[in-house]
Length: 269
Image (cartoon, one colour):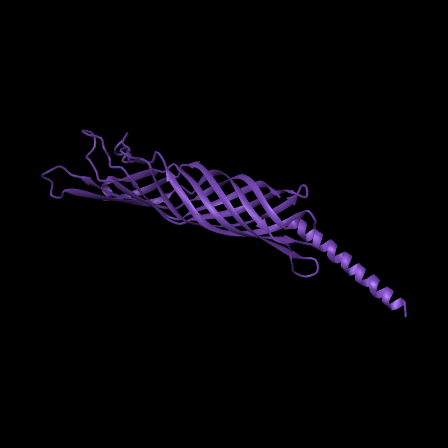
């Protein structure tokens, strides 16, 4: 009679101990974290279009000569980036006996340093030849991310993860140049070569986290950042006595896709 209560008490004690140990390990994984990161990559080619009009002298059949140059930027332009993140990771959700997934919500700021894609753009009317437009670009983005980190039976210190995010990017161009070999020394944006625009952005990332200590984690990842098409307004061509005056110029840039390789550190509070 006494053995059954003792056995039951022992079983309950064991279950409670296992539950407490699991709760402790789970609580250690859950919490707020902050991170910093940097990396390199490239932006792929995208469409570029310059539109405007040359103001013709009096007595010409038409008052304006419309200009439309369309083409694309160079195939790949190298970039460097840095940023910071603040997030909260929840306890793991069991995906079977040996697998679990830890979801996290993350706010991230990204800065992509100056890079200068150049568009090679045939001009309409065709007798004006080719326009070469260089756009020295920097990007700042604020992204909200959902991150999914996976616990596997293969390691207690290295964890694969996936992430997806959306946000807004501010694209700034400073010192743009619109050159034509037929008009050496002329920058057709010379009266105002600076412009900017804001657009919707999305990203996907995949990588590995390695726990250095209980609070400090090293991560390395690939991410693809995509920024929706943008539009810019540059100043008129202003070279009195050297070039006919023009209206202001409008430049449209297609979707910008960045392939990025990033590494950083996270600290869990």
